[in-house]
Image (cartoon, rainbow, N blue to C red; front, side):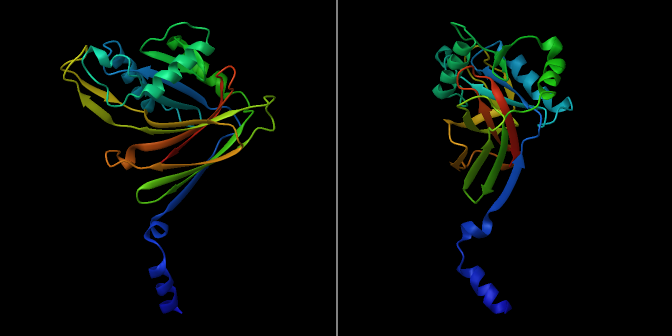
Amino acid sequence: MKKIFLAILLLLPMSLLAQDITTVKSPQHRVAMIELYTSEGCSSCPPADLYLSGLKDKGISEQQLIPVAFHVTYWDFIGWKDRFAKVQFDERQHERASKNEQDTVYTPQFFLSGNEYRRFAGFSDDVSELVNQKASVDLELTATKQVDTLQLNLKSDTSRSKLKKVGFYFVLIENNLSSDVKDGENEGEKLQHDYVVRQFFGPYYQPEKTQSIELQPEWKRQDLSIVAFAEDPKTGEILQAVRLKY
């Protein structure tokens, strides 16, 4: 019998033998999500990056708050090209601003669960206020980890929501990143980053969605996390979020 079992294992593809499956479910309460729009070419951004990184040491769990940092491209012209920036992130920031009835964008700029945010003296209280609300959307995120790919599956329950349409997103983020800046406004600085968005997918409008991600060699596996969130497509309000560590 052992010989038969061993023979079956030898016939299975290596991708199946290597895969690891992890699932996380959102809590009954809302999880707050803070978005930072930043750039390595902006001299005002390093303090904001450090603020975001510092959230790791404030005892706030991913059951309460999920931070993400979108690096934008529109400061690249100064002389330093931000390697984490994408035009896709510029577009999301403009979309955020529009839904907040703003005509312009800037860096660093924060949004807390979809609303532009500047009241950091009351940050803990504002996060607590969101967390104390019952979630209108439930999320279940499953990640199947293989050698070079990540297969994601998101299931949602919107039965308690009054919205007819909800948008869903996947975000791959990485911690413990740094850059030695050689030009631009931050020339000579060594910049530290956490929660950096590496890949961003969505919106999707179906209650269950799968997404495949090809893992890049430069990504540090131990520092990766996957975030999924639900958003009101009209107002940009983030209704629920969940994070799964790689």
